[in-house]
Each structure stands twice: as structure tokens, then as C-alpha cells.
Length: 219
Length: 219
Figure 1 (cartoon, rainbow over the protein chains, first blue to last red):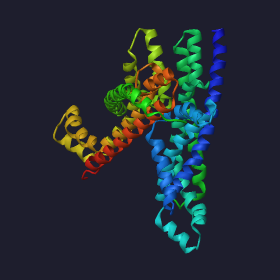
Figure 2 (figure 1 turned 120 degrees about the vertical axis):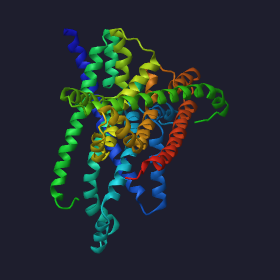
Figure 3 (figure 1 turned 180 degrees about the horizontal axis):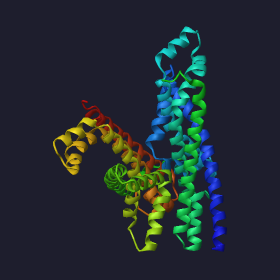
Figure 4 (figure 1 turned 60 degrees about the vertical axis):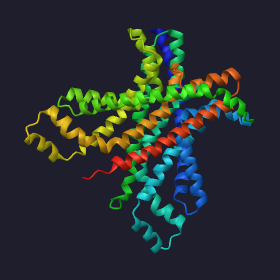
């Protein structure tokens, strides 16, 4: 039992890596989601085409394939990534593609009268987007973004397969060192679940905060 | 980065072998997920609060934790209590259980969408609870949810590379072993990506057809 505390430290170290990866991946995913999501509703064909290709490609191939590709194939193209960089890149681009569809859907869900109001106020396309459409669309996106963040958290476990010492990796280390199987895997499952609960709780309180100024606007 | 077509043709039979296992795992996993999801959805509607609550939490827990860790759990922990499963069986159970918690939500929505008049009519016709479900509710609830279910089965297909972590010789594992033997990563990894892209884009076409066929039923 005394030994177990040492192993618990190892698992907590893994938890830190998982959290770090989730945060960095989420930031990249968020950037990609807005770029591609707004690209899909762009006036210009080239932006629409690029965004569509990005989204279909990353949603169509599996996250594991993308991760392995980033880690094993890119070095042959002269781009060597550390496991952490490859992980953040693959996770961010993959989840970003899913979230881009959320952005697009949310932008399209804003009523037509809002666009007409923008025209009436003589706002430019970008101004209207920035001050009228996005603030309303953001609220629609939030709950699904929360789900996407949880999916991203769960997907981080695959980076253990490219030798990054995250939670899942440390569980395997503890298993091979102690031979005990239930303790490492159960504690890791519980930590993942706790992190997922924190994300969904955080998103929900953020949603409440953001809804505050929009009383009477939302339908 | 040099692409060698001869090498591609050489490794193709091995990869096709892997594709077969991947598809087999997806089909078996989908069948299990369809059954598990229905079970969870029915249990959550149970009159017995203990049953509905505990099944609800169990589903929530499975959905909030990574499939990879669950697969490790099934593969490494269960043998310690005397349940020794072949890798493919462990993988299919993991896939089925994980996605069962997602399909449960689809069933729940589908069942909730059956108008209340149908329940009342079943009661008026003096049908037993069992007959109400099998003759009235489920036949109306299931067709509209087929597209949503199929969506999850495509998602499951893209998660099958995880089975390589518990030594199932599916597409990803075959590609990795080929890559390690010849120390060439570009062709195997890219081909795996191509296989996934082709099959999942193909399934999306199938999905569109399913949506067309079952999505809009007269209400």
C-alpha cells in the first residue's frame, strides 16, 4: 500500500500531460473551427472549397491514422515532430474539423432578420459578423463545443501509442511494473471521468454567463 | 519523400487482410451496440429508480472515459478474475459497450418521439406491456432513428484502429507490422488513411440514402 502512493504520483504526472494536451489541442481546434467554419459560409468559392476539403478529409480518416501519419510519415518529409507536437497537431486538426461544422451550423441558425438588420444599419459583412451574428451564434455553439472538448479529452488517450507519457501510458507503466491491473486502470478511468465532468460543468457555467446579456434576443 | 508503387502492390494483400478484420469488428460491434443501446434505453425508463439511476450513471461513466482505457480494462483486468477473452472478442465487447451508451440516447429520443396517443391506444386495446413494446412502440420508433444509428456506426468504424493496442490484427496493426518489417512508413500509413477515407466517404453516401429512405416518415 505504501508503494501505491509512489505509483499514484506517476499517474498524476500522466494526468498533467493529459490536461496539457487537452488544453493545447482545444485551442488549436477552436482556431481551426472558426477558420474552417467561417470559410464554409464564405462568399468566395476558393475558401469554401478549402474548408470543405479540410473538414471532409479530417472527419473521413480516423484520428489514429492522422496521429500515426503525423508522427511516422512527416519526418520523411523533413518535418520531425515531438510526440507532444504530433499529438496536439493531430488532435487539434481532427476535433477542429468536427467543431467547424458546429460553427457553420450556428452561424446559419442565426435568423435572417438579424442579417437584414445588419444591412439596414449599413454594417459591413465583417462588422455584422463580429458584432451581431457571432455573439448570438457563440451561445448556440457552446454546448456542442463542450461535447467536442470531452471527445478531445478522450482522444488524448491514443497519444500513449506514440510514446507520450499521458494517463493511459502511465497506467500501462504501473501495470507492467506491479502486475496489478485493476488499480491502475480503474483509477485512470475515474480521473478521465472527473476531467470530463469538470469540462461539462465549466461549459455549462460559461453558457449561463454568456446568456446573461442576451435576454430577449434569443428565441 | 519517395513513393514506391511496387512496395504498395507488395503490401496490399496484407492490408486487405487487415481491412477484413476491421470491417468484421465494426459489424459485430455495431450489432452489439444496437442491442446494448436498446437495453440501456429501456433500463433507464424502468419504474425501479435504483435500476434507472445506476444504469444512467454507468452509461455516463462509459461515455466520459476513453475507449482505449476501457479496452485495456477488458483485456487486462478481466483475465485476473478468470474471464479470458480472445483479443477480437474483447475489442468487439469494448466497441459495443462504448457505442451502446451513445446509441442509447438515439433510442431514447426515438422512443420519446412516439406520440402519447399510441401508448394510450395500446392500453385501450388491452395489450400487455411486452406486446405494446414489440408491436406498437418499437416498430414506430426504430425506422426514424436508423440514420442516427448509422452515424455512430461510422464513428465506430473510425475508432477500430484502437483494437491494434490489444493485439487485434486489424488494418492499423497490419500496417504497423509491415512498416516495422521494411522500415518504410510512408506507404503503409498513407494507405491506411486512404482506406479509411474511401470506406467512410462511401458509408456517408449510404447514410444519405438511409436518411432519404427512413429519415422523413409521415407524422
